[in-house]
Amino acid sequence: MITIEPIDTAPMLDLTPQEVDTLLDELRAYHAIYSPLFQRREQRECSEKYLQGLLLELPRKSVEPMVWTLDGADQNAVRAMQQFLSAGAWDDEVLLRRHWQEVEQDLGDADGVLLLDGSDFPKQGAKSVGVKRQYCGELGKRAHCQAGVFLGYASQRGYTLLDRRLYVPQEWLEDEAYAERRAACGIPSEVVFTTKPMLGWAMIQAVHQAGSWRCRWVACDEAFSRDTTLLDQIAGLGLWYYAEVPHDTRVWLERPVTAIPPWSGRGRKPTRAQVVAGTVEPSPVTALAAAVPANAWSQQLIKEGSKGPMVALFATLRVIGVREGLPGPEVWVILRRNMDTGELKTYLSNAPPDIPQTTLVRLSGMRWPIETCFEDGKQSLGMGDYAVRSWRGWHHHMTLCILDHFFLVRLQCRWKKKPRA
Image 1 (cartoon, rainbow, N blue to C red):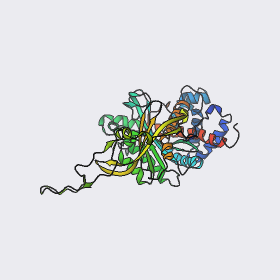
Image 2: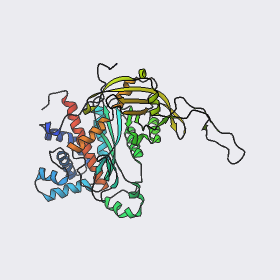
Image 3: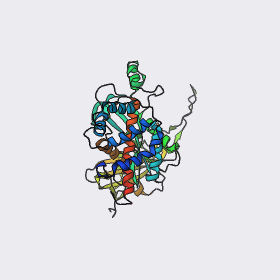
Image 4: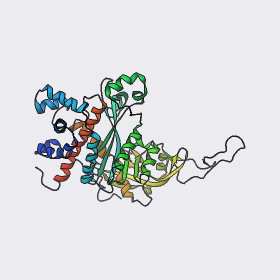
């Protein structure tokens, strides 16, 4: 039976820069939070101007059109902004940590969700840091692009981005043929090849170690959930993961018997347990979905951002995860079938056995906030319009885009309590 009220996930950001009549005054007050973290006056001025430029109505928000709109055709101002962005010696990590404090203050919730996802940026040529012909999610095909990994946060109060990492392909860091490009892009010597899941783990760790941060969940898609090490690391922090997984993910309905095989008398004695012969093999989650009786599915109405309310069928089962062919942790498998299209989505979660099904249903709809962050960032805040090629420039630009996004989120949260301008 369909629930009377839809299950809410997070409120939609419906405030755009064009709606803010007092934009400049509000932005100056917001920038004052971060201004003391810049060591030089020129950096403070450029950072405020860059935040303002990203909020302008322009077809493209690279440095030159933003500066020309704000200062006129002043090439010295353009060069100063390019220097500030690409080579400026200001610490964006310090800004982000202060940003986390502000997000916690305005959006923090004990049931909050860390959102892990990737976003790609099509780029021409081969000189931009980390660019490679690879699958580009924005284009839906292989193309020259840079790949970013992002951490977001969502609660019943709103959502925004927290952190960013640039994925640098292995050949960029290890092949001698890339040595000149590494130097030109200013990749720090201590940077080593790191997979996307482990870039995500580094951001989760950093936020967790910052302390006094309210969150309970980490949600991710199958690009990250394939790495079960990441899932176990998240669980090790005392957080609950909610991971969309591929349909061929295998689980046991009951924990199989394991034992160390008897020694044959030759070679080393076995020390690693194995599943006892004759034990039932683990099943793919699609087989579990096919075996769920019709009366075990429940209809739920769930809100998913711009998509609005959606009716889906849900079924949940306690299962045993697989780790290197052996039984792993006891987890939930959540099955969600779209009633209009029949599309099946499958999730795993280490949430406790007594968690209400409505909570598991709500979490299945928590991927959209970070996807909407990317849409907002690329369509309204120039997130993909940068023309910088350096390692430092990429991280500086993304940091300022993150701050600008939260500027709008913050205004929306506060204007709920008083009339808009």
